[in-house]
Amino acid sequence: MSNCSIHPGVPASWECGKCESNFCSECILKREKSNFSKEMIHLCPKCIIPALPTGHTAIVEPFWTKMHRFFLYPFSAIPLILIICVSIGQLILAYIPFVAIYMKILLAAIMVKYSFDVLQQTAMGDTKPPGFRFDDLASDMKPLINQTMLYLILFGASIFAASKGPILFLLVAAVSVIAFPAMIILIAATGSLLKAINPIYFGGLIIKIGGGYFIMLFFLSILIGAPAFISYNIRGVFPDWSVSFFETFSGSYYVIVMYHLMGYVMLQYNKEIGYDIDQEKMAEITSAKTRQQIAKSTQSAVQPAVNDPNSELKKRIELCLREGNFSDALSEIRECLDTRNIQDNEISGFYYELLKMTGADQSEISRHAISYLDILTDKNDRKKGMEVFSQSIKADSSFPASPKALLKIGGWLTETGKSEMAAKIFERIIRLHPDDPAAPHAYFRVSQVLHDGLLQKEKSVSMLKELLVRFPDHETSERAKKYLAHINGV
Image 1 (tube, rainbow, N blue to C red):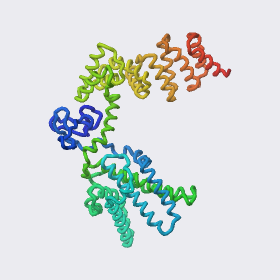
Image 2: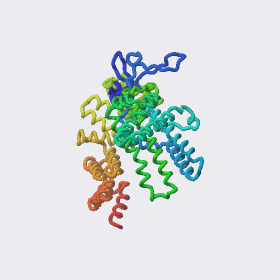
Image 3: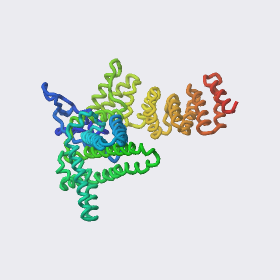
Image 4: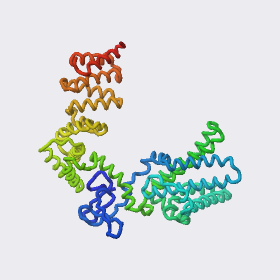
C-alpha cells in the first residue's frame, strides 16, 4: 500500500516511473491527449511525464471493516422502492390465479437482474446503487440466463447426488455452497457459464482470494439464512395475508446485500481475480473521497475567496503542499506572521497541522493553539475546537487557553453531558481569570452544572452567592437571583 507523496495520509492512485513518487487523484496532472480527443492522460506534477496507475487495492477498505454499510445499502431510494414494489406485487399475485406463477417469476427475475447490476457497478468502484428502468430488463439478458442455468445445474446435481446416496449428496451440497459465490463472481468477471462451473476456475479463484473468500462466505451464509429465520418468527405475529409481503421483502433485501458484498469483494481483489477496472473512472469515483481525506488532514481545502486579503498566501501554501514542501509552507506562514496577525481559519488550521507534521517545538504549537482555539470557538467549530483543546491539554496540563475560549469549551462539554469536565473548565476561569469579563458567566454556568448535572446543591448555591457579592451589577446577577430562587423552591 502506497500513499500520496504530497498528502501522506491519502492512498496513491498513480506513480511516476522516473522520480518514483506517488500521487492521489487530486495531485496528478490531467491533460487531454490531443485537441481532437477527450481521452485524458495523467502526468507526474514534478517530471511532467505520463504516470502509471498503481492499482486500486490500496484505496479499497477491506470489506470486513465496513459490513454495516452493506446492510444500509438497500435502504437507498431506488433499491428500497424496488423491493417494496416487488413485495407488494407478490402479495397481490397471491390472490390472482392462473397468471400469478408467471408474474411471480418475472418479479423474481427483475430482482435478480437488478442485484446483478448492483454487483457489476460495485465491482467497478461505484458504491452507489444503480438506476432502474424497465427498458433495461430486456437488455443484456445473458447474465440472468447464466445465473438461471447455474441454479438449475446446481439443483440438478444435488438431485442426482441424492439418488446415489447421502455421502455423495453431502459432498455435492458442500462444494455447491462453498463454490457458489466464486461461480457468481466468475459469471460477472468472464461472462462465461462454462468457466463458472469449471472446478479449475472456481477453485483457482478461491485460492487467489485466500482467507478473505472464507470471511465473505461466512457472512453470506448468515445472509442466506436470515430470510428463513425472519419468515419463521413473523408467523403468528402478523396476519397471515401479510406474511408473503415480509418474506419477499426480507428475501429481496438480503439478495441485494449479498450481491453488493460480492461486487465489493471483486473490487477489493481485482488484481487477484484478473478483473480489469477502468482506471480513469475509478479515479473520478474516488476523487471526492480523496478530497475529504485531504481536507481532514489539513482542516480545509485551500480555496481563496476573490476579495480575501490572504489569497496570495493561500496560493503559496497550496503550491508548497502540492510539491510536498511542508517546511517551505510553514516558513511562508511564519514570515507573514512576523508582519501581521492572521485571523484566518484556513491558514491557522494549516499552521497548526504543519507545526505538528514537521515536529515543531511544543511551545510554538501551544502558542499558536491559543489563537487558533479563539478562532475555532468564534466560529463555533465544536469538533475541531475540542480536538485542539484536548491535544493541547494532553501536551501541557497548564495550557493557557483564553477565558473566552474556555467558556465556550465548557458550554460544549455541558451540551454533551460531560458535567464534571465542564465544571472544572468553568472553575479554571474563576481561579485563573477572576477579573476577566468571562468570570461572571463562568460563575453562573458552573452553578448550573453543579446543580443540574452533578446534583451538588450546596456548592451551586455557594457559587451563586459569590457571583452576587463579586459582581452585583453584572448582567448575570438577575439571572443568578432567579436561579437561586428556583433552587431554593421559592
